[in-house]
Length: 406
Image (cartoon, rainbow, N blue to C red; front, side, top):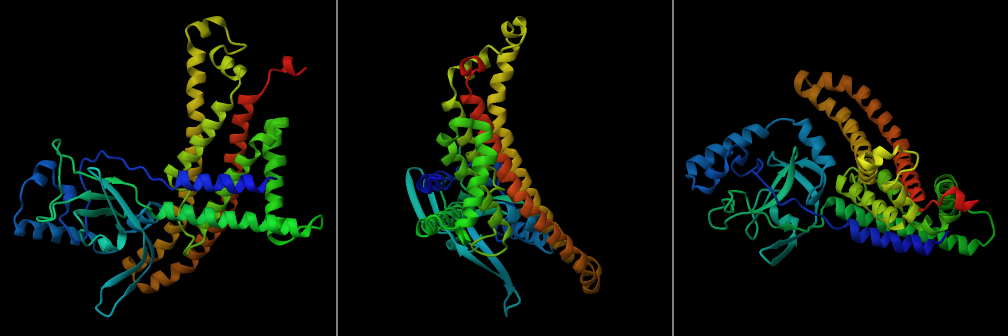
């Protein structure tokens, strides 16, 4: 096992996955704690001036909608990305609920101008800063929009869409990736130092854990799929397995610096699948491409039509899409189920009183712990499946015909 290759590739993954792309098409904007409920305002009304009385009425309506427990917002807010890292809430002496969170860098590119500041400037979505406003959160996607600093009204373009800057911020997911990569590099390098120090003696501690997993990937996933070409792709596939399983496990630990739903973010799983897609098709030999456009064992009329070449070309793109969706869906589902059992306690308490909530708590906690333990198995299985299928796809691309191997 070449530890230096693994460390170098992890650093590359940290750079690539740390970037965050934002959609720039926006047809409305989300309810906000201290601003008008703009979800019910069409783009024509947004462009018009509103009286203070109208804004106050909308503000009251939005506040009334947000009172009480919203399980959906709690659950979705946990599994989606954010511009700050929420830790916990507490009730202050003023009777209001306060939030403790870690501020993260906000990096915005607006009309060629770069603005960099910390997310605490938004005061958890209660304040504007430099003509920007943080909207969404909970059930809605958290985004930053441009607002007029004098009137506080959102700025719209000629098409009536709310203007948004290019968001290159270090969000919760990006920060969690950097933390996971740093911890993983330390873990692998520490195991390498132990192996060098002990020489030929039996491995112990971190060395034993890393070697067992590395040999498992090499002997049970890579070599059966790639044969004598496995050494060439082993660094990438080892990196893939270690990164996915490490992020999966960190997501199950409910306190900082863990707890982020890294592999439950489809942008992350999409980048991992894209890397596999690129490696597979750049490694493909002439027989791989020949079989796509001239599939052996298929009637000639299906090749002329050409039905089979189209099917094979579509298959090139569906393979990474399946990899992306499988990992994303399985890890997100686990978090949602666990949080669902936790919020049941508060739902029952609000509906039937504290006694009923106390009675259902042991059952909810039991099932939440059971699902969390099951997620430990899922964390490994998803890393295993993603790595094995990546090795399979690469193996199919570099495989030589049997006639030439004979």
